Each structure stands twice: as C-alpha cells, then as structure tokens.
Amino acid sequence: MISFDLRIDRRGFSFDVSGQFDEGVTAVFGPSGAGKTTLLNCLAGSMRPDSGSIEIDGENLYSSADGIWVRPAKRRIGTVYQDGALFPHLSVRRNIDFGWKLVPAEQRRLDPLEIGELLGLSDLLERMPSELSGGERQRVAIARALAISPRLFLLDEPLASLDVARKGSILNYLKRVHDEFKIPMVYVSHSVTEVVSIASHAMLIRDGSVLGFDRPSALLLTAALDGSPVERFENILYGVVGDSTDQLTTIEIDRISISTRHQNKNPGEKVVVSLGANQIILSPREPNQLSARNVLKGRVKEIWSSNGKVFAEVGVGPEIIVELTESAMNELGISVGSDVFLIFKSSSVDVFDA
Image (cartoon, rainbow, N blue to C red; front, side, top):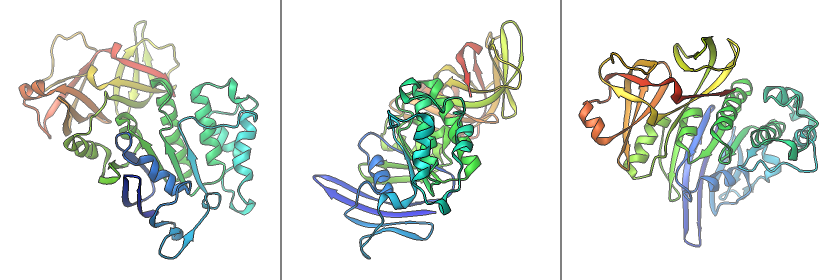
C-alpha cells in the first residue's frame, strides 16, 4: 500500500493531493494541467513537494515533518513515460538489463528473460530501438521498468502516441504484467477509454485537487457533473477467435459472442477488439428484421452526460459504453436498471492481434 499527503504552492500553481493506493491498477484521470504528472513525479522522487509525506509498505519515502527524503534510485519505483525514453545506443536486451543491474542482487525478484517473454520481446532482444515500432518501444520501456523489481509501477500517458491497435495490445500486456507479478500500478491518463479498460479504481484530479476516488465508470459521472469534457469513447475488449465463414468471424468475449468481418485468424487465437461507443444503437425492445449482426441483451448500470452527449454503461457480460444524444435518451425513456438491447454491425468491430 502507498499513502501520500502532498502540497505544492509555486508560481500560481497550487497542488494539494492526498490519498492511498492499494493493490490493483489505479488510474489518475483528469484534464491537461490538472496535476496528474505532478503526483507521479512526487511519488517517483523526481519532484520534491513543499510539504507532506509519502509512505510505501510501511517505509517513509518522504516526510517534511521528520526531514526524510529517500532518493529516487533508492525507492524501487518503476516509471514509464509517453516517449519510452530508451537508450538509443543499447539493444533491447541491454536496455532491459540496465534496469536489472541497478538493483542489488538480494532485491531482484523478476528475471529479465521472463519479463521479455511475457511482453512478447523474445524475438526482438538483439534489435536497436531505431528498428522498433512505437508499440514495441513502449513494451521495452515497460520491461526495463519491471527489471528493477519495483514495489510500485507508475505509467504516465504511456499510450498517448500510439494508434488504437497498438493501444489495445499494450493495455493487454499491462494486464498480463499485473496478473503475473501483482505489482500495484498507478496509470495516468486523460483518456476515458484507457481508464475504463485497465483500472479497478480511479482518482479524478482537477486544478491540483482530488475531486473523487471510485470505480472508473462512477468517477466518469463525477467528471461529467464537474463539467470535464468526455472524449469519443472506444470500448477495448479482449477475446479469442471462434468459428469463421467466408464473410464473418465470431469473437468470444466473457460469455458473449460478437460477429466481425472475416478475420484471417485461427480459432483460439487471442485478440483485442475495438468498438466505438457511437457505433452502437441502444434499444429498450428486441429488434426485428435488422441487418445488424450483433444484438446483445444487457442492463444499464450507469448513465452520465457531457457536452450534450450521454454515455450509458451497459452490462452484457463485459461492460460496454454506449454514446447517445440527450434527445435520443429522453425519447427512449431509459434509466439505470433498464433492460436494453445493444445493436451494432459486424463492420463496426475492429480486431487486432493481442
């Protein structure tokens, strides 16, 4: 567990944030300039607050009252930033080994080769960073941060420069990392898609203050009520390939099946699915005689509005976000707890390698 109580007041910027993060993935969410990166920099030790405290697993890393300040290199906190920041003159293997060698032998818990295999880097170990794609570079950055056997893993907008396909792939790898190594993660983003896809809890920050700490979907309601704009939303789902015909492929996802355009993939292959919230029709009645291949029955769990748009979280097995206009929601008469049907075409579903 990590707990913190941090205050900064410099050149018109006021930052007063406190809280605690338990095991799991906690997203720190908010608009640009809210203070998300400031929080991570304080936790990592690259920024020193004016006052307050930081404690991890019972050890004080910072206490202004007691004069305690543990240097960043001694904190064993892994960090990954938007650009990855790999050493350009070192191969993938040597980039990962660099982090591993920083840690005293008695504190090494994770093997670099095991990390590389988990992140799909085994065939890339001798390549140089200039020979890698953006998604591959981020995976190497994640592996290097894991090689220090961190007590806490901090990720600051790690997917901001990637396209949807690579974002879905990296999110899947991060879930594997958490499931395998049980390292608490703090994931900073202003992306609604990423927050809902990866986090078990979320903290909303605005103007250097905490507005809420809750489940991601509930926190988005808080954000909407506060006036924070909610971006175009992509549902990121994880599944396996099922049966195929000449025209369609079935993807099995958490007790439901989704039909997509034909995929040149083998049954049982793991995939990432992207489905735009604005590509889904929400209906209170089961449809008849529609060309759409996908009709899923579910129940509305949350509803929030932002800038004239309405977002509904519907449980159909996995949770899926649907975007509507306010007028459409009013006409449908749908509220939290309503049984509904989600309708979307197979052509609205994008499928990527996991």
